Amino acid sequence: MRFVLEESSWAWDGNNREAFIERFEQLLDRLDIAYEREEPCAASREWLQQQVLGSYTLNDLLWNPDSPLDLPFEVRQRVVGHLNMMRYWDEETAWPAIDVNIAGRDVLSPSAALGHARVRERQATACLPLPGPWRGPCEVIVNGVKEHVHFVVDELSHRAFFRDALEVERVDEAGLEVLAPHAFPDLLFLNGVWSELGHFEGGYARVRQSLHRFLAVLDEHGAWVFTDETGRLSPEEPMPSVGGRKPVTNQIIQQRFIRWGFDVAPEKPNVRTDGICRRARERELEGQTLYCEWHYKLESHTNRVHIHPPVNASGGKVIVAIFRDHLPLPGDG
Image: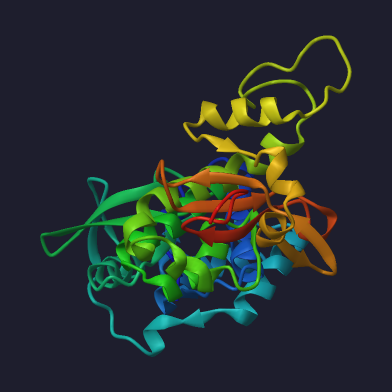
């Protein structure tokens, strides 16, 4: 499992029903995305049976017609859909603990304790709380032992968890291939690219940190860098008040990447005109030949990641096409 539903975040004082339901819907949105990305979720049986408002259990709040929560019909239907797919981890595993301290707060949370135990065993597992005070990596203490467990409440914390999982689990090449679509969901990795990790000088182990950093920026900003027609060098800049579309030139693309500290560049024209060199940079996607000239040097003299701007066949995602120490250049012997 990758996610567990955290219990203690469901405590409610009965006030501001609309805000509570909005938080509930945020969690349902996150569950939708997790299931869409095939990221296993589980809950404890305690999740539904715990008292969250006086004598009301969460189960009472969800289904009792006299419940003060009185969930709207459409929200209730979404809950039913997820409960029908839910796995209950404590049917297979004993509670590791129930008394937990999360970010300085003492709570009862068997699922946070499970996440803590799994992280200690280098099995990256995050909590899905009802959105509230906890977000991102939080210090969790169980029986005096501290670990950092991720609390996922939105897309940024979702991706951050999987990126940290690469380090928690100390993944090898096969592990990176499994986790990369979750850590970098707005990138398309071409078939066969993972087998090329061994072509890096020094292998994946030598480039892993710089490769992860580059993929993270490419995932978050790459599509914008290649397609935004406002002329801005950063999405944080204000939108221009006048003027129409501006061409996305190679110079603008390079300047945008430099804003995030990456010198990404296209090949020189003589590389395209050299048949051997051009073909070494070509890859196929759904019958379309892509010339993957844009590249980032993980080191100044070697180890390149070749990418391609979004195309229709990539669904608007930047394409990660080639991992290589060095591709042929005109004049190579």
